[in-house]
Amino acid sequence: MAVQSAAAAAATLTGLLALAVLARCNTEGDILYKQRLAWKDPNNVLQSWDPTLANPCIWFHVTCNLNNTVVRVDLGNAGISGPLLPDLAGPENLQYLELYGNSLNGPIPAALGNLTNLISLDLWDNMLTGPIPTTLGVISTLRYLRLYKNDLTESIPPLFGNLTSLLELNLQKNSLSGSIPASLGNIKTLELLTLNENMLTGTVPLEVLSLAIVGNLTE
Image 1 (cartoon, rainbow, N blue to C red):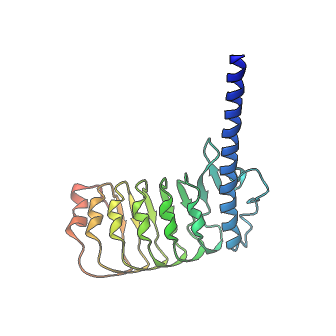
Image 2: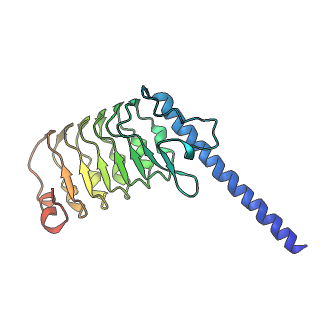
């Protein structure tokens, strides 16, 4: 009897876990489908993003892990246009958000700072406007932050100095102004830093220049 009770309990637990995973997958699918509706997609690259399917893991341009949670969205050079929704911060295990080479417009949502597992944020070569959200400076897992060739304005967030795992920071060809934060000198892992073709003023901080000597900066 005890063995049967234990087996029944285990089966119940397994069923509950399966339901939890399914619910999470459906939630992520709802988020991505909402984003699809906000975009124009003349090349029909998002045709497989069908909300009636069990989960988004079988959609094109979406990759999931073994737990069927979304870890990658790959839509570089896809011909899409429109805004980025704050809802994109919903897939909590997202590691790669690759949306470069499109015609995305409007601001970068501050909510993207909630993607605490993000490794790569590639939004370069779009038509994004407004300031760079300070909230991106709290994503300690970030290694690649590429926002170049947009029309981003205001200053470089000093909080970016907290991105101590960053390998590349590419902000060139925007409309950024103000000074270069000395806090960027905290990023000893940084290998590539590009800030040219903006409207930055002042001198390059010694803390940043020192990265070529005491850090890994090569470009």
